[in-house]
Image (tube, rainbow over all chains, first blue to last red):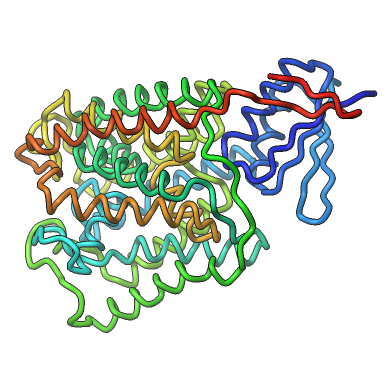
Length: 71
Length: 361
């Protein structure tokens, strides 16, 4: 599946969540979000799960990739 | 973490410990107040001349060090900064002006209500209003731009400054000023206050407890997570205050408070507005400062400067009510925060699409 990427690295709370929200409004099937801090990871996970999405988390080199998909 | 139960327990602990600090000597309804205690600390260092509010508060030191130790232990300590530093300084400054108009940070606002001080209701309504206004800017794309990784050593400086302050305080150094009367002279024993700060800082680092975030997330995302911590603080402090016999329901003769509803509203509206643009309430800024977030250190320094000026320029309210200077400062503060909001809106939001097609948001 073609996925859309939101680069929210370096953004302070709540911007990563807002960017994810806007992206999900455009791409309802799901998006990938890259963040670089734990707070953003937790906030986005909580936000996406509240909307009924599945969230997969992959971490490498300090970057955190959140793969958000419709159930 | 990310778990509602944990943040509720966190809130209950903060609420109870706040009541306990009052029992052991802190001013009533001021078990913990980030704005008041930064102001007291600045006074203790001689940076303002308000003789009633000069004392280096160990709670602040404890919160910073608690957050530092916890984030370090959990490998979440990250030195980063460079996200609009001077704007953050100005926002911190203005948040403090708003808080000292009301006489308390968002945390103390909840504690005041839990002590029966109904003036805090005007503060809460104003606070929510300020946050609502700030959210309009967030939705339009307000951003203070990204932050960058910095040399790790820089992140240690703020905790080290706090250790230094603690040494001065414990040794009763003659460099510091200690209020002989007034709120600054009322304090729990140093060790107890420090311990409470450490526990609160460590816990809040885990749960991201934040007063501004609570209302913001509820309005923006219908998310009750952070606000549940807020409510837990209220409940625990209420029970504690009743148990310790300091609960006193009403508007008049409330400790370190005034009864001007309009300016209680305005003060907290300004604090809420500024804090939303900063990304968190004064307590959250303090926690982040301990975690190596230099942007938050700058915001805290802004608050400290704001506190000094608030007393030097007679902007801070007293139990007799707000001052004319203070009212002018709050209005000017609104204008400045609105301008900061307006000029930091990022209009072209773009998402990368795999395959390199750009989509304008």
